[in-house]
Length: 285
Image 1 (tube, rainbow, N blue to C red):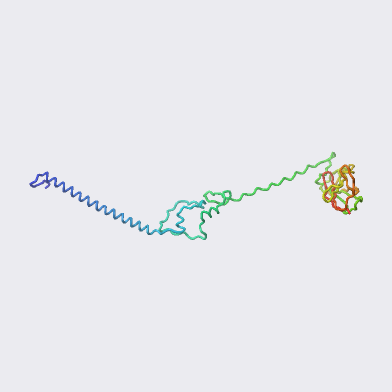
Image 2: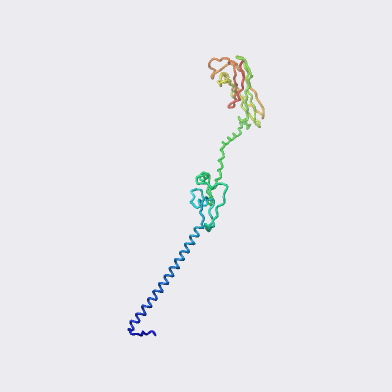
């Protein structure tokens, strides 16, 4: 059956058969390519339609939701980092954010509200927290001077410290100009122990001052005290001493003319060693 039969030569018949087969194969390939091209164009059209449908279904984002997608200019870090990225919902299913009582702060207001670097601290999770105010340094108070150690005489008897002795001046409230005046000193043991104190005349000084503070008279100028007097004073015990004053002025070394004090107000101060009494006021009439 495959053997060529006819007036032509066998070679001619074989060439014709090969051409027919090649033509049939070419037609078949053309048909297959055409069908495959239509199928791909149809799929692309369907994908474009679906994409268009999805795109058209996506809502237009405005307001707060649209602004939330833009990068924020605020320099204040987020209150807390997200623990892990969660799958974002599709645009069609995204719901608008719930309204808040106060508007979202702008970058300028957030910068104003952020604490200064020296008044804030960054926590471990990156959020800014107000730093606790530093405790103010306690004001330093000068230490009180230590009391002097007790002193004793050669016989082992306690000597009165200055802190245990009170001195007061005594003078009549009013005296006549040029008249002799009796002025005095009161010494008191204000401590809690019996002690000895030198109250000799050489340690006693009486001085009169004018209303402006001018030194006008003193026993140290013309008649300094004399004698030795050491007394044993019980707690609360007092000693009184008096001297006569002529009511006139004096100068150191008892130089210059001594004149009666003019009428007016004056003060007297009594001294016992390094201790001085409060001023005692009097008037010369």
